[in-house]
Length: 370
Image (cartoon, rainbow, N blue to C red; front, side):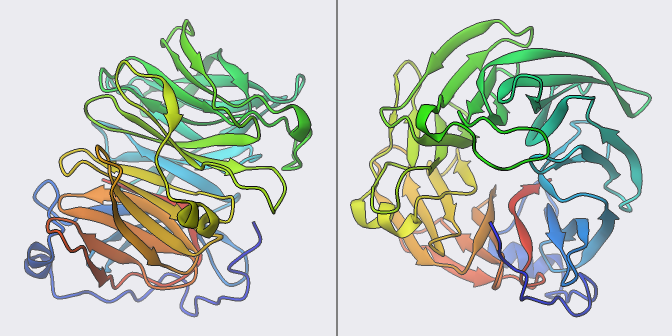
């Protein structure tokens, strides 16, 4: 999606202001693990240069590291101060960053006839990483590239199938052993974002073991709904955001849910909200303690929060080019590609929005909070 080009950052991610320290953040309800969370995301500058960035939610910059290719999602190591900034499809470079100072520790290059799809996960042991990748010799055939941490560097170990086409996000079930894969169903060729099979898409939600054994594979009723992004609640509820690849005048359900022991079905979203999404969802997040699900729809400039159990709408708010969303102790943090980043306090019946002193504009579609 072509956006943000007209927005200049000016000082390029530098000079973010503080809000007066941690005391104010305790008042704002942004408590997390006893300190102000570290927000990780990918950003561009006004000249189109790519950065892996880390900010405290009080606005203070921890690092802004220039990288060669645009990144998408970010995952942190469970024990070490490391995070992988994963290349956006069809990127071929992902970046291992030291979270203390932003040092680029390693550039991971995809193997020949493979490219990254933007997402990865690290096993709870801290030893293994799984990244969604495309087999360009059989365009669209999804694989998880398997990498091992050896002396704090990633070494390629092998691959396992995702049992589908065009895998996008991969996540863990609460057991930390079962993988969930959103197979987007779209075939693309090497170095391309052009969809090759819109009349024969094969999206699917797959549960699989770490050795590649398929546990289940489910589809939605609309075959042109590309299953893209995932959020997993602590009870095993899976929430998935979609992109609809059909005609502009058509309507389709863009949020789906799989509750424990139940089939994968559409989440109850009002027609007016579906229309406001403009066929596209970006990030999805779940707040397990508050039982809430949040979704960004940047093409429609809307941010949504629902009650995870009842389906009740808790928030339907305008937010220009809303991008990444993540859960913090008392609600959600959301970034904006064209406006102010915000914190939504969700502890009360009336949700309260508070602007954050983070730089405005040019954020990628995902954020990760450590």
